[in-house]
Image 1: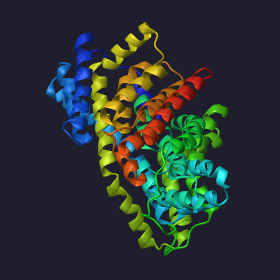
Image 2 (image 1 turned 90 degrees about the vertical axis):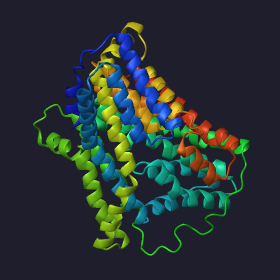
Image 3 (image 1 turned 180 degrees about the vertical axis):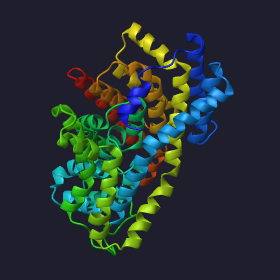
Image 4 (image 1 turned 60 degrees about the vertical axis):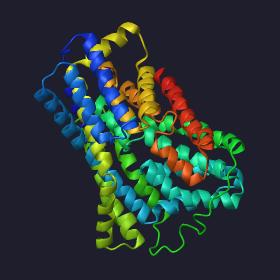
Length: 463
């Protein structure tokens, strides 16, 4: 289902099925079940979201068949609208990594940077690699390069590493086709092209502040030796030739350009029947844009690196098992969202927010940040906050809804700590203590979240 269709479907929210007090208790109970199941019970988020959806409906007074119907409807709609995009994005990322294209981007940019500009170059590398890749995959891919650059430059592991992490994390939180932004776009009916364009605008100053600028300060706070995990250049021993830097960048930016082209056509071409508008609308549809990127990538990245057809098939297929858990969590989040929507809590919250005259953007960030703190999951924070914000975006323009999506994205990366798997991944890769990880990684995530909110609020003054 397209974003436009979703917006039309969600434009009329259901009337509350119970009194305001009961609905608030139902929403709080559902969120509490998710938080406690994940943090205390160590239950997988997929099961926690199912339990949360059931709790919301039952406490609100709905019948069991109605609760099941709401959850399965939301699950199926989200799997169809978002799951395909996540799968295509994972396939493209796998092609980029296995072909050596990612290494080519890293080596080209870092190789042309002076020692003083290396932190800025690493931020750029992190952002480009983070555009198509999930955070964890990008981190694993970049760690050998971070080690190598830190050792050769003598600038310190933290000074070099923090900018790269900032680039990866900002893309993960703000820019589709990452699961978080896609979920929020799908739930709130935002336009993907507009959100992508604004997400890049928000990400640039956010990365600068939390990456190269903060990295210098963090490097003074924490000094750790460079691990010897990867002593050799990560390109050594490659069995295939790399695609050129130009071809690789063309492949990476192709879906971005196609989706932005659709958004620009909607702004500047009024006549929907014009052939240019119709072509750009089709090519810029997220499913079509990412499918084109994968097919083109099979030739530019796959064949361009010497892979044969069987190897390309194996490469793209290998990307899917790794994201199975993410797909189930995202789809279950859609079920939880629909359970909330069908109780009418969205209508209640919308009326309350209007009466209280609270900034919708600020409220979106606060909700996402609180759930992120409680669960440690950016995806769960995005899903839950988007569900609660559904009634509050009625009547907002396309640009304003996109800013709400980005505010949720900013809140979803707030203060990574011990309940976040990313916290431990960074700690172990950088060889830091828990305290040092708080001073560097957690502080960077907090700065990224807050600075992202500031930029979104600033954009809200003119959009």
